[in-house]
Amino acid sequence: MNSPGRWLLRLFTHAIRRYLVGAEQRWVFEQPPQGWVPPRVERTSLYLHVPFCRHFCPYCPYTKVPYRESLVEPYTRAALAEVDWWANAIGPAKITSVYIGGGTPTLALDSVARVLRRVRERFRLTGDDGSPADICIETNPADVNEETVQRLHDMGVALVSLGVESFQPGNLAAIGRDYQPIVAERALALLAESNFASVNADIMFALPHQTAADVTADLARAVQLGADQLTTYPLFTFPYTTVGQYLRLAAVRMPNLHMRQAHYRAINRWCMEHGYERVSVWGFKRGAVPRYSSVTRDGYIGIGPGAGSHLPDGFVLNSFDLDSWMSATCHGRGAVALRMPFAGEMSGWWWLYWRFYDTRIPLDNLAMTLGSDADKARGWLKVVERAGFAARRDGQLELTESGAFWLHLAQNYFALNYVNTLWTQARQAPWPQAITI
Image 1 (cartoon, rainbow, N blue to C red):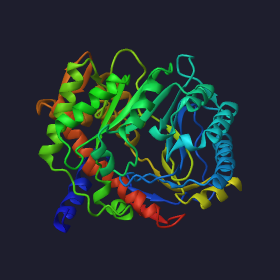
Image 2 (image 1 turned 30 degrees about the vertical axis):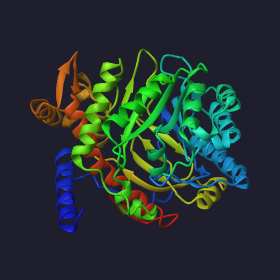
Image 3 (image 1 turned 180 degrees about the vertical axis):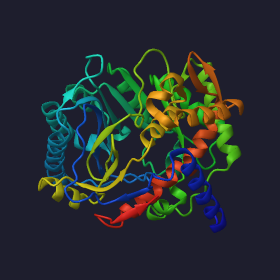
Image 4 (image 1 turned 90 degrees about the horizontal axis):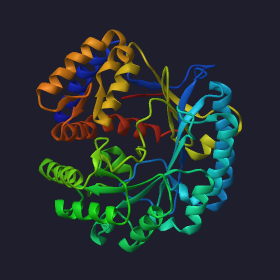
């Protein structure tokens, strides 16, 4: 985007944020004040970040380091220490779900198992209804075999996601995957027949030279192999921004709007015709299986380098630098590098944002979650409804296909732009002074 376009985008973003959240909310991540500790928490979720990768996918912006066996034990000790730090700070909270991502978590399953044991020792790992907490993990096709499956079951993992991206050799090559489709096919089939509560397949769209028919063929193949959930996502804006420059993706171009919309419509149509309901802007599932989602948590604590935490009073972000994160946690200091406190009804607006991501907004909850801003939210939702982007059904406002697409596009341009700014600057120093988003 050219400079005038960026300036207009910032101006528009500033106006929208000021109108919705208010002038008192500062959009600045700063070092926590001396002596800061997280507030006590009764109920939350947990994210464990495993940063190791053997091969770096060129589109992936997440914190990662080349896999070396010698790094796994120091990482594990640091992760255990960070679990203890959080438990001492927030108390023995109920952890209703655990999400394990990366990186490539399957490269360090012994480490993951040890961390999960410590989590069970220090927290109450249980769902709201008393059932076991959902434990979700990302897997890589090249690392999935019968031994992997057994170890995941032994750890109590119930929901598994496989990063398929595509079953077509040309598309795999375009995104830097160096294996043939048969590897992903065998991995997905094995996971699907291994009695997990749910198996999700990630499928990418709007790739260079990809057609809508290519995308739906990938969906059909994933379903044929046993996936009961499908997460479809495009090349994010990361490749075209400063994170993309960091990842040396200057040659990649943003897919045009027509291509993105055509692919998204084809995905929606195919999923509806084959019994998959939309459960998020990008996710679809079939039947009564528990929903797989990597992001929609009302609160969470993050373990690992670059991991974020959503606390009742704001967001915090760990140091991105692996050595700095390990040193801080192992010395009992905690690894939080940056904090953005909430002001006014920011927490409620954040809740509403993720309900849009879910594509379903429970209208009865607005007063409780948004307080004095509830009427403002209702007025805004009426505009969304009148524009044809949502429809009322059973006490909820549900996004239409058009609404879901435009939200996906807005998230690409706005929300991910904030993340890009934050992550780009957070990479430049282990302990940044302040970052304005």
